[in-house]
Structure formats: structure tokens, C-alpha cells
Image (tube, one colour):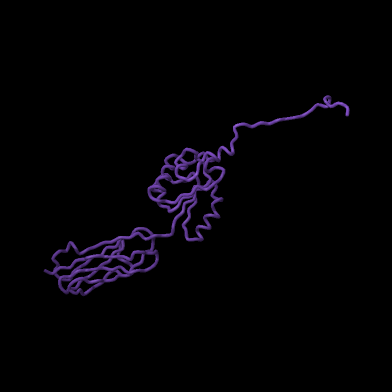
Length: 235
């Protein structure tokens, strides 16, 4: 019987924002026929190459489309086939595929004094990183919020400004989804910042009590030695 089917729609393995590429569509026909193809990118017709009128030969037919992705993230393509003649099974006249298009690596820097993070942020931006700086008041409060970033730097913010839920989210961000994390030193970091016994100490390859012990002494002793003039005899 006369039959047309959208067999597959494939993308290149690697996609980059702003670079054009080819999609390969495979359409089966049981006998030579005419069809119209419509290619959608997400909810809209593909901007570079969307509608084609094609003469199919019997068997498998490959049709190539050009496309480009303008923003990073997930993109979905759908190919619809409209036969010009009879078609036995119209339910197989559509196929979809999707891909995730990477953007620039994103870094979040949380710093008690944002001015102190400017030099690092500038260095990262120069090397094609997207950088966001936040204060302690704007620290991410959930794993979902943290997962938007590829790397997180906690710089010189004391334990009292970081809630238990936030520390647990940081721990899960590293261990569950493979996010990058660094705690930068300062007089409000590590042991001096009060992180001893917290998930941050478990997460990082440092012991946070030794630094506090070296700065805090259990005993302070002051000696004042003097003399009175009457105690000094003749020479």
C-alpha cells in the first residue's frame, strides 16, 4: 500500500551557539511520491530552512536542512511530513529530536565585599567565563538555583551568614551533580569563619580547627616589673 513515514531526524554530536549546521532527515516511501516537509525549531518554523517540497524515491530518502541555535540550552526539532497522495499510516508522519547546546561556563562568586572579587571576575571574563558576583545576603538557597552555575566560589563569608540548608545545597551541588566548588581564604573563612564541624569541612580537603587554635590562645600572661627609688642604694 502507499506509505510515507518520517524515519529519523539527527543532529551533529557537537553544537555551538551561533554556528550553522546540518540536520539529516530520513523519510521512507513505499513508492515514488511527492511530499512537503516542515521543520520546526522548538515551537516555531526553523529560521534558516523550514519548508521543502520533495520528490521521494521508493525506499529511504535523506533530506538535509540548515539550522542555527542562537542561545544556549535545550533545543527541540520536529519534522512533519505532508504526503501529496494516499498514505496508509498518517500517525508516523512526524519525528522529533533534541539536544543541549552548551554556552560559556558560568561562575558564581559570593564575596563579603564585592569589590574584592572584581579582579578575579575580570580574569575569568577575559577567559570566556560568564561571571556573577553576589553578597552573602543573596547566596543561593536551593540546589536548583546553584545548578544554574558550573562553578561556585565562596569567598570570605562567615558561617553565621550561611544557613544549614544552604550548606547542604552546596554539598549536594558538588556530590550529586558534579558542580565545581572553592572556598577562598580570609579572616572569615575556614576555621576562623566558624566552619568547623559543618558540611563544608566534610566537603573540603582541610581540617578547620587547627587554624583557629593557632590564632586563639588559652592563656594570656602579662608581667609588669618595676622598682622604687628608695630601693636603690649607694653605688
